Amino acid sequence: MGKQFTRIESSHKAFIERQKIFFVASAAPSGRVNVSPKGLSSLRVLGDNEVAYLDCTGSGSETRAHLLASVDKRLTIMFCAFDGAPVILRLYGQGQSLMRGTSEYGALLPHFEEVPGARQIVRLAVDLVQTSCGMGVPLFDYKEERGSLVRYWMAQGLDNLRKYWGLKNMRSIDGLPTGFCPDEMIPPP
Image 1 (tube, rainbow, N blue to C red):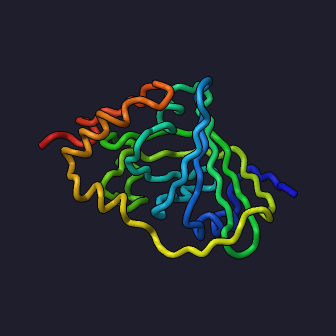
Image 2: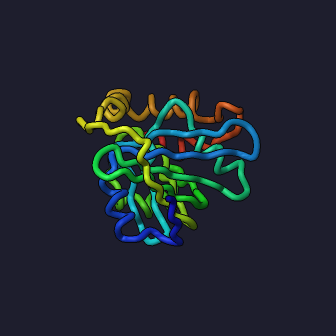
Image 3: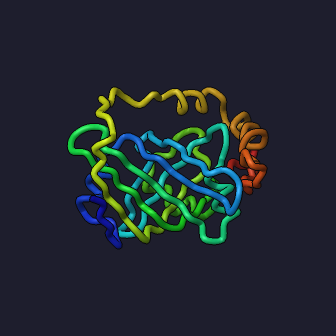
């Protein structure tokens, strides 16, 4: 049976910190609902009602576009136990995208190890924590992080990262603007 909490309890925090993968769900008022897997040990519990994750450059930026387009900024983060006791934990609340190069991004950056290709920090003000059994989630063995994404952006360099943002991360798949400003995120030399 599912249980609901108004804050992240210490047992929830311990569970979250053990997970190697989490899923982020977002939606604009219309268009597609997006669910993205995240890893790289990029999520931090910042308080009883706040988490944030360092977001790396990918082929789109649906979460940021959805947060900008929606009035209520709904965001859900889900964790599943792929080993040990079966648990699913969801964090519900209002999200905020902090673009790389802004003072807000810089203020939260000490909580993370910035990696090549980082483009934003997504912060979630948690208003509901829900746990459920997770007995239908299969067991998987964790091997290691792929490392491919970090190696790719290291090899590409900052100029190519800026170009990629300009080509691939300026609009969602539904055409919503992301508001990314590549030259502000990484100023040209």
